[in-house]
Image (cartoon, rainbow, N blue to C red; front, side):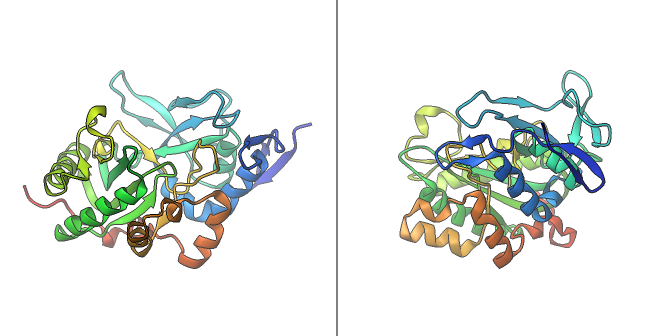
Length: 298
């Protein structure tokens, strides 16, 4: 019988709690739900008011995966949704606003992906993102070298830059923005990527062309586009182990580069609560309007 749990006054049927989702470590669905409940105070502010796209993997990372943006059949009526523009016409997407909505969504077994804008202002970005994706044999070590250069370059334009692991093999850099059209943010991020390639030709590429990427870090600026999303901070990823897209300090980024050890920036779900106790939310500047800056003129 599927257990019924009450979360903030909402009744939830949480299924298959003993099912192993990550065979490499034996991490179960129940542990996934426990992780999200534990990380909720840090995660929810990054989900709130942002239309969520789900990458579902109900049979674990080795099973079928499917990406969905539309409101799922059977979504409880109390889960909030928002109308969002699409090229084919408006549609509705889920908003994960509270713990009950988070636990309902986590029960689906999913990664969370969100845009750089909020539902009340589609296409008006309040954060900038750069996805640093190393092409083998490059690793997150090379991504750290690129990240440190980009941090200085963004700081020269007045931005406070935060970093998190992608939860896969790279890094995400984020900076709080005064609300800015997504097209303008994408154009600015592209200029940064081109400049990084020019200054670090041995390390960086700004084009997605596969033949250019081995051994280099692809600075993906395209996730600033209004139609794109990025892995939400603190989301679990569909990898062999229960890795998490985890905020990191700049000292950790520098240490990974200096020691050339990718394991220094690999974090699993059980690692995150202690990090939150030690650091709080390292991405708090993204949620603080006074820390936001406008794009430079030109």
